[in-house]
Length: 286
Image (cartoon, rainbow, N blue to C red; front, side, top):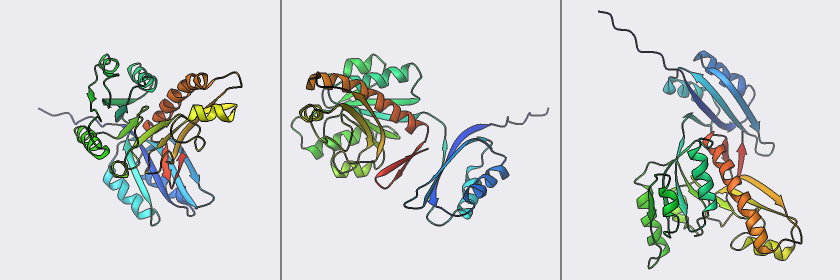
């Protein structure tokens, strides 16, 4: 009795490369992909005119031998290169919240209807207010109160909970607490925040009050990676909306909430598609 061979599994993966620019890089990389009989569905590249750094995102389809492919790329690429071969799958994320629901609710709905390809493994809040909302989507909600704890003790309790899950990213969906440098370092380039201002303007608390007092004509929001500098991390996505002298600070805040949730979901979409390279304190989006 003959046994049928296992079916060949054709999959899609994203190849991300960052390295010093040199002549013929694109040809070298694509020739290696061709040697492996991998189909290039989409290819995007960029060279920073200041640093001379080369960035390339290649969407590949085929039968992969990851170790051999990466070994051959390492031999071809210049020193100081970084390369990642990433399976196309939903990113596992844990969401941190306080009391405001608009960003969290938007993410939950977009995950529910399939328009945002992420896997929310849990939501952690320092208040119990959003537990009912989260549980409606059959997701775990962990209330870890900060009352009576130092900042470091509270963060250690949160970190212990996060480490129960294998997560790719941590999303601060209006989590209105400043994280310590130690916590940020533990999850370097994996914490995404939505700031209710068009950074670098109006950092810190009460940006809509600051904007109102300055009489601005646009307000905006910024999704960025978290660093130890307050609201200074690499920017992923920004959007604005028009306002005028008729807007009170409260009107600006209401308008800003729509911008905030849209910016955050668009930033998460870019992350899910492996389009974001961190380059110093900036990002390159391919």
